[in-house]
Length: 187
Image 1 (cartoon, rainbow, N blue to C red):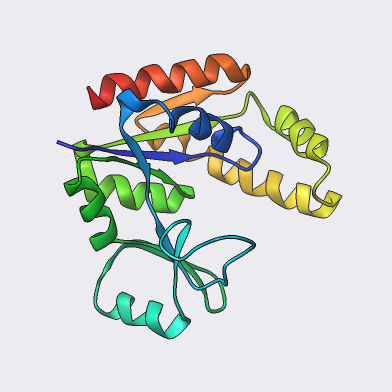
Image 2 (image 1 turned 30 degrees about the horizontal axis):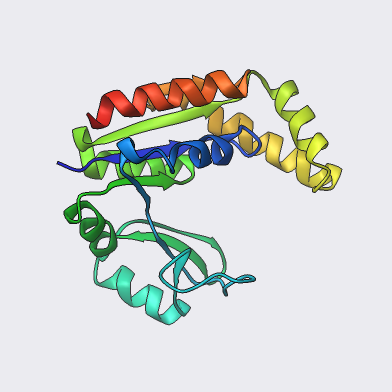
């Protein structure tokens, strides 16, 4: 039976890098969940590949029809969500489905899938280390970095509610830990 792997982490924790190291591992048979969103495509993004792009009206129609496992309105008319039909198709195709979501979405997915899901929280070694990583990226203003740190502190309070915590104080070790945990779960 195909399974669900849920990744959550504060911004700058290395989650995307860890997920990226796992996706090509054929023995894990992983496929990304394709989320729905009302934001417009960026760059070369294609409908049905990176996201299922839809209008706010279409999204609200799916909400009314109870088609989502989880969804969130991040900003006015800017929705993100996971369609039941999309995930069920991936699982029926034999894929182990990977989610990269916020802590609230992660909690809802775990509740929905139960024992069929593994929830992983990627944790930085501490807020100061996270601050250094975010500043080292040189992509955000000091105000945005502070907002991300405030959000990280809030998200870290959810870590104990996840099945497993991977502390990323050494990226190669964190990748190896995540791989071993997922390999054991899907085999």
